[in-house]
Image 1: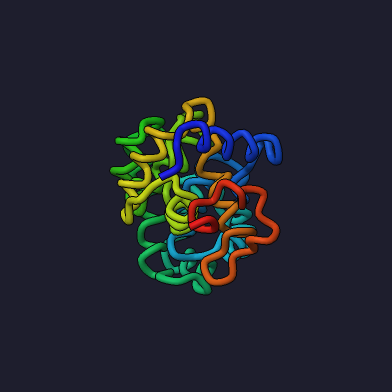
Image 2: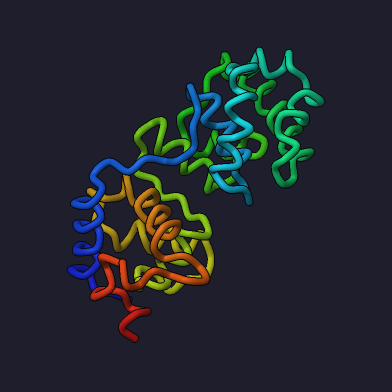
Length: 209
């Protein structure tokens, strides 16, 4: 594990290089962002954005999504993995938001986690991006990069989340997930990491082991 000054240095470099990182999912409003996050499970953001552009033009509210119906939703998202189950969850999510929340997303992570298709990681993404929570979502990129850099030794998403919340200075929590995702997507890839281009190479535990 890296020590606290080394961890701070990593996130100071992230902030200097990209002070306002953004999630790469495209969505016109809060509801469609939640749907996009739901659709992104085990699927690339690029693939979700491709289907989302047409889906959200047709249905950008829970009411419109319900009117569209499950079969039409399937037609829009059939290119995505697990599209049958995802379409079912999109419709169920829309029903619950309409019936229980006046078509608005709940703000708390606990309430978000109760929604169909929204697990802990997705709830962390939504509460962070939409409602300003300092939550940290752990996907495969975040887990891999955290292990390689030396930010965590855990092999589970919850363990990595706990380590990041504990070891990363709180001032960086808002952007921690996005920085690590982008680093994993474009520099620290799973099979062929671009160590020669990495601005964190001198601090990386894996590179210097």
